[in-house]
Image (tube, rainbow, N blue to C red):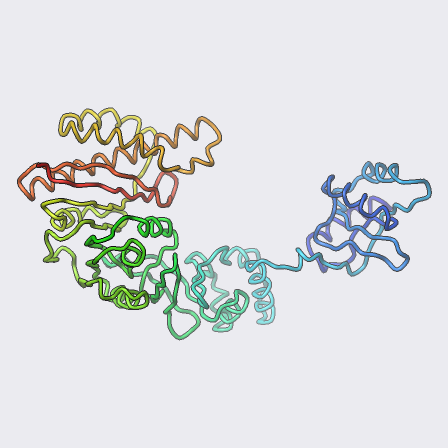
Length: 457
């Protein structure tokens, strides 16, 4: 009898509504003792509620496949003689509060199961594996990932599919992301599946952004850099944002960092439309001039205290432009974004050669960079320093930072050469800070180099 009860309990654990479950019956005064023991032994069924029965006893749900005769023996020995300790069934068990609260992903799965069945289809593991595990929410619009809803079955469901998705996820509009277009302006290939338009509003650090998700990029992963930009001491300064987009950095420079004026360059007309709206939404339109078109044709010269080069995977094409924009009398600071591949072996092999090269080309810069490298290691905890638990990972993290430093030093030298060629006199460059933004893949990090550039008197 005991073994048959255990076998059926294993089947019941898969579905809260599949039938009776295994329970232990005892008097109410011993229920808490039972519960603590079952929790400690990890055999309490947390998907169902403890129930008080009509005769005053208490039924504690247990995991039949894990409960053993030894568990029962220990419980019985802890009770006075003639006390109830019985393993039995309970029909129509009541789900626990935790079990009743469905995650959005689980709710979506259940709703789509019903839709497929009602449409005469058959639910399968393949369909369940084709559901999104994550998505972006922009107000009442859900943006799905490109690797979801690819099975042919979904097309047969028509518009009702997207209405069901929206209802399950608490949205009114649904869009699906595709691959980034290689059209020079990095237009997203986003398809609006439900709703009239793709315009949404997003708030970061008190700044309002509006944009059309089907036309413009928005990266929530850049929030740390937007927060850092907002804290920079830019009061009274003139900035140029060479790749402004919808204003990811332009607006924080104006709203929080206190920049006197920003020249924002952007050639995607849809991003320019959003940028204008965002400047107006945040009341800073009078302190920004938008330069629409190819920034290589920009006629500005000798105006900037800072230049932001926020283009990935690299902004090298903009370096000569940035050098022309810096004030030739005083110089300024470049914020250079880059995706850097950090392979420990590569960093170890090249670091010595790079230092020798730097000492030959620019001794004062190489010394400055080594000093800044030590300070940089104190100032930021990356990559994932808090998670480092063993010497191997720590060695890898140190090598990764060394690779960032190597790239920063090389970049500093190249910028210095560009400035000297442009102005016909010596300049110095100094690494102020290297900021890790996020990792895209193993050994690939988006980082930002703050590079000070000054003419030598």
